Image (cartoon, rainbow, N blue to C red):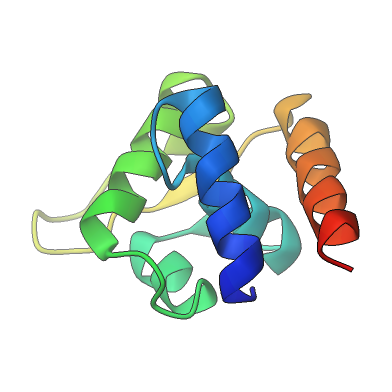
Length: 105
């Protein structure tokens, strides 16, 4: 994800979710095709443009509105896994990402 796209998604995310990274993380999840993700994977997928703690906050926010489900952890020091749920939110995420990309051309 380009820095310009990332910045535009962050700005829109603050407006929609009150959190800078929810929308960029959601777009990355959609583009990755992964059904199960961790904050570490999102950190790499976003090219290090966000920190792991804020990404984890974004994942937890998405779990709070049922677009993700946090899976049980086997131990405290192990990564937290989140599974993508079928939800209309993912269509909205794709639309925002497409709109921002078109505006950047």
